[in-house]
Image (cartoon, rainbow, N blue to C red):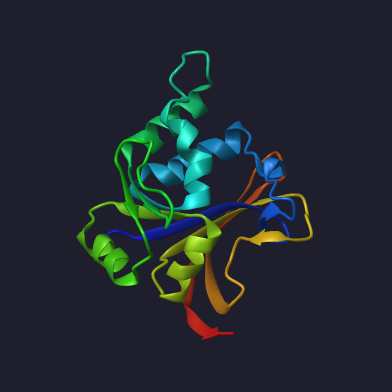
Length: 191
């Protein structure tokens, strides 16, 4: 059975994008990017919301030049090798290989994917991840906190559900990023 893993690059105050939609302040350096690659390497399937998918589509052709860094080439290979499920009400076809479009998030179908998989699954995009958290589907949560506070924007974690976590591990990076690895305990209450 595969685990569903949520990871996010976010500000120290919990936002994946600032009020203007920017997230350049969270761009990982090579050390952080290598850690993300190691996390994603275990996954055979990535679940994405439309906006997260749109951000990642360029990886279909990036990372193939020998002039690009090893960490970039590694990420591109990992991304292209995985199956992708994109949840979108507007996207009709996918411009990337190994990609299926689903019109809506179906918690039962995701649980069936987990049950049938011999590899982990990842869920990308905080809006989609919020639905998975609300259905108790997320098995691990990895937050890469950048040493910047942006004051608002798109939250990394759901605001409508109280969640409790058990800290599994943490890691400090030279650039000030802290990786917090959590296991959700259970869903407590929706507000």
